[in-house]
Structures are given as C-alpha cells and as structure tokens.
Amino acid sequence: MDTFVADGKTVSVFSAAEPGAPVVYLNTFGEEGQAVFDALTAIGGPALTLVTISGLDWDRDMSPWDSPAVFKSAAPFAGGADDYLRLLAEEIVPAAERRLPSTPIWRGIAGYSLAGLFAVYALYRTDVFSRAASVSGSLWFPGFREYVLSHTPLRQPDCVFFSLGDRESKTRNPVLRTVQENTEALCEFYRGQGIRTAFQLNPGGHHDHSAQRTAAGIQWITNG
Image (cartoon, rainbow, N blue to C red; front, side, top):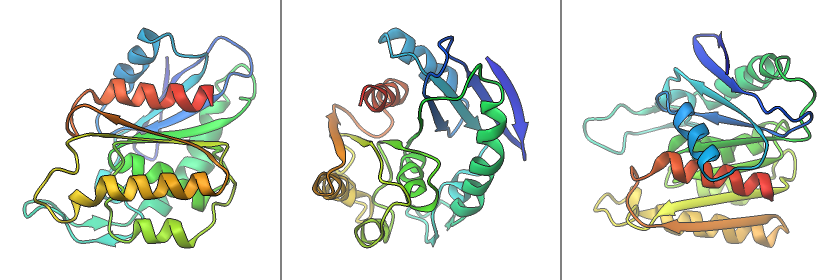
C-alpha cells in the first residue's frame, strides 16, 4: 500500500500486481479502506487497484447541493461535491495513477452511504469514471432522484451497481424512508437507458456489514 496526502485528504493505493488492472476509487467516512480491501481479498475479488480516500468533510464533500439536516442534532448538508470532485479528478486520480505500473484499463468509483450518492452524482459531472457502485447510497437526498431523471451522464457508464439493507427504508423519518423507492426507480431508469444495472437487497440496516457490502459492489462492477 502506498499513501499520500492531497489537500488534507489521505489517499491509499492498494495496487494490483497485474499490468493494466482496473482501478476503483472509494471515498470513505472513516478509515475503512483496509477493511474493504481485506473483504475483497476474502471473497477472491478480481484483480484491481483500490484507491481509498479518507479525511473527507463528509456532509460537505459528498453532498451535491445545500440541503437541510435530516436529523435534529445533525448539521445541514453544505453542497461541496463539485469542489471535491474537481480535486478528485484533477489531482487525486493523476497522483494515484502515477504510482501504478501501467495505465488502468478502466476507472470506477464506489462509495457507501453519502459516498454512494456521490458516486452516482460524479457520473453527471465528470467523464473520468466509467463504472459506479452505490452501496447503501443516500438516494433519499432531496431532489436527487429528480436530478438523475432530468440529466444525462457526461459519459454513458458501462454498468452501475446499487444495494441497500432491507431495513433501511423502515424508519419514521419521512426523508430517509424514500431510499428504497428512489433506489429502485433509478435502477429501472438506468436499465431503460440500456445500462447494465444491478440491485441487491441485503439483510439488515444501514450500518450492517458495510465493508462486505462495499466489496460486493466493487466486485460486481469489476466483473461487469
């Protein structure tokens, strides 16, 4: 593993030995990159380079636009995704790939929770990524479903993966309980666009088995 810092973010490169292996960029809430890499190894994941980014200002860097908090004790979302995406595409991706033995055959993006929302949003704001995995993605985010249905990705993705826990929509919170409905609607929309799309419903709530679920999503888009 090779690690460097870009604008206060810690970037870890788990490089594949095979020349030309694909690379997947994973934005993380904490420092769970190693856990996801270990989970990929445990399931015999395909050869790929995993690049993880930590030290994010989560509610700012991963949110596409300003939005009120969904919990009374939480801060509002600050809508800094475009700024962070610029850093990711223009600085982090080139710096990470200079550390690889050769140019990757393709480049994907993955994330859990708000980072899953960001992974889908990135398809509409940059053509850097050709595959995306939104794992327990925060697709309840106000206005996001409408945004996807009314915009066109800058690059038609090869494939998109979605998953949720089967208890995630079972909440009294009126915003969060739309997550499964919105996720399924976006899956059908992408399929209608001729994009290879998967949806997995896993046992449990939002915080269950996050590393294993993330690894499963990365494995799917790599095999896709």
